[in-house]
Image 1 (spheres, one colour):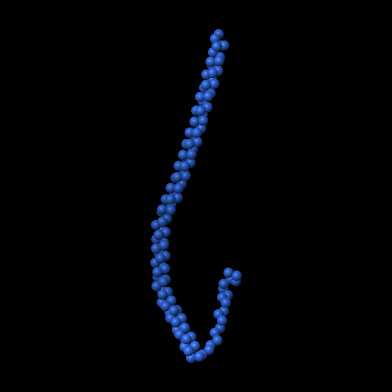
Image 2 (cartoon, rainbow, N blue to C red):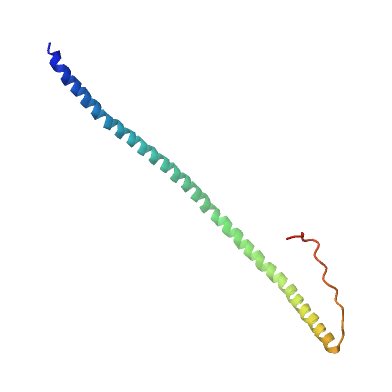
Length: 123
């Protein structure tokens, strides 16, 4: 009976409810997007932590390997030092012979050094 009077009121209430629901739906969607972004960031951080842990565990063995390599290089230097000294002494003696020959007037024709055939040409 009072339907003709209540119909506009019902329509107004319905419009108000729809307008009130739209911001709630948008807020819910934004909240879900933020939760998904936080979840993605958390997964990314967990992955980075795993990588850092792997790197941290490999530093010790790498340090030990470098220490062994350094010790091996020291041993090689100690072994090769007498050879280097002998080579320097040989070059000094060779130079002394060249000076003596020059002083005494000897002329010796030296062979031109042969090109290294093991190296590829053009490099």
